[in-house]
Image (spheres, rainbow, N blue to C red):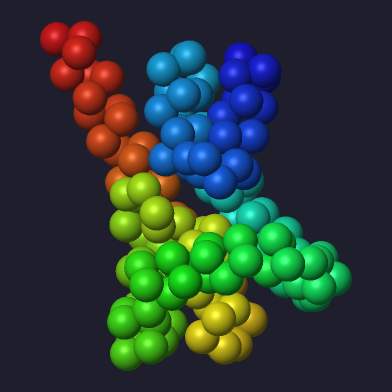
Length: 153
């Protein structure tokens, strides 16, 4: 059980699925339903400070390199295109709703990048990302539990 929860938390930290993959993984492996929600939520929230450290320290150093800069501009444009209208128009609420949608391309990674690019104050961006993550986790958690219950009947 511990290994399955740990794996789910690693999925929740990764940009390849976040809690949208971690929660179903853990639930399907029999981890306690409340422990899954809490563990995957906290792991997903941890991404925001990691990303901000990346923006402040690592990104500034690597932007000197052509290929990194080219890739960073590409990722920035994608995040800006996905969240741009909502974040520019609605600020905190737009960022929160963008992160809350449990679909590919949204989440804390894109939300952190969008908040950084649009100059949203860090505390507000963290709160918007955290609330959005919670909503997204609750949607994925509830729908996975409902699907599992439906499969048993």
